[in-house]
Image (cartoon, rainbow, N blue to C red; front, side):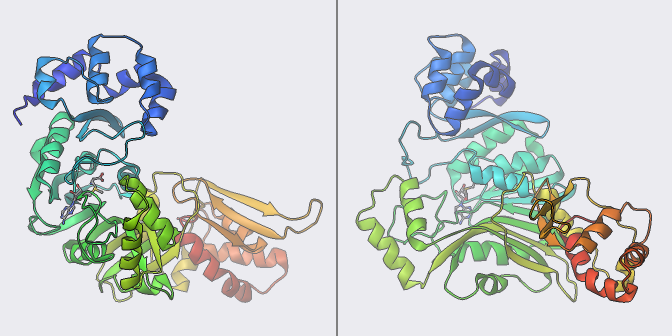
Length: 457
Ligand SMILES: C[S@@+](CC[C@H](N)C(=O)[O-])C[C@H]1O[C@@H](n2cnc3c(N)ncnc32)[C@H](O)[C@@H]1O
């Protein structure tokens, strides 16, 4: 594509076709409509305006025929949406989102724009300064924009050449392209070397091989084979201390899903795996048939027969985070966390991996501080002296919560970074008239949980 990126950017800026400009112009209701893939509210907001900003909105967001500045004409037919991340903003170039009840992607090599999965991955990614990062399956290039903020070099791969062409436009318009390399090929194959961070929103949909093959969502592996390959091959590409973060779906064949997922964790890796949602095969099939606009006819039976042939009884959807630690005793937590979270959760994920692994003596000697976002909730009959339940809850990130005893809540509440934990427990034992050693033994497991959940740092 013959595009003069600098001139396109100048044309966009001159017309105030920017995140702030378009937000002001369209207003909250129209933006909410676009988030629902409904264009009517935005058309309503524009009325019959034909100024340069309105024409860019019509051409690149609403998919209308509209005349735009000459420099931007090579992009006609694509979607170009202002996008903000952190303190920055730019544009994301993709294929046009089907609007107004049209669902089917018109071609197999369709390049999706920023989706809810894209923004979830962006917000779960640990944002620490790093030398070298990989975005596997870059699509429109959205993850690269985020990664360039804290990684010196970003490598992005995709099997779809159209995706790489559009990602190049996204990055050229919005970031420093010199620090990013875009490589064509299958999974990790085109990317040489190892990485401090791998972030992937891969084509995780488990579809039968006969189904329409949308490259942005289906990888052509059996069942969850692609997800597993992304995790296992990615772990082998991590530098010491490096992290792999993948969002997606996995098959549940019966039994405990946590045992199945534990098989995916290569030795030498710490892991935090959070299952956010669980679907039965029917709900899963309907979700993805509807996503592609496929009627629930013979395709439904084909999908179900495929799931039966693989013994898939359910599907887990969630977040897989690994860190290469090469420790003798890896730290592994695999759990259901279907509760509401307050994005971004990346800092909480980092805190899990960074939480020190301490023996009892070291735990008791530390001066812990209770997280600023911690709250205490009590449930019970009004007027009763003792609550039936005491819950400690964090109000940011993963919004972790735990039921605790009154004694544990009192000790956690006293953690202000001044006194060692052992002294605080000794003080609580004196107040309660209980034996200090016995209270210590009773509270330590709960204290460890509070450290892992970021209540105590
Ligand atoms: C769900 S999209 C994610 C796009 C983008 N990273 C995001 O977060 O929005 C998955 C991407 O993986 C690419 N892909 C599919 N199969 C692949 C493979 N075998 N190797 C590398 N990339 C692949 C698709 O072309 C698509 O761009």
